[in-house]
Length: 104
Image (cartoon, rainbow, N blue to C red):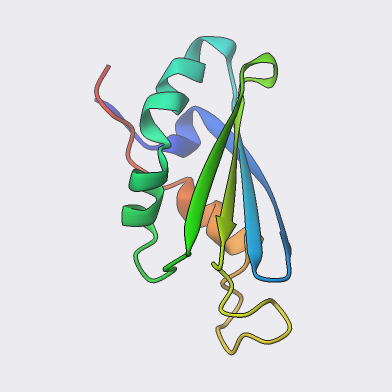
């Protein structure tokens, strides 16, 4: 049973201007390869379909067992300009943790 991302990872988030960042950390080093397979820009975009960022960059941080996602244009103009209800860093990170894992 593949499960969901929150079973193997936790997130830290932030946002500045129109950019949201979601850092995803594997809870155990042995699960880092599963995190790399599951959390691709394409899968993140499909999992957050209403977000419509201009670009999703993924930075791999193997020494930390983490991935940093930078979602450009994800905040509808920025936290202070957006009319959306709390669709910012912490909400996006919590939603990303429901991403289904891939079978091993």
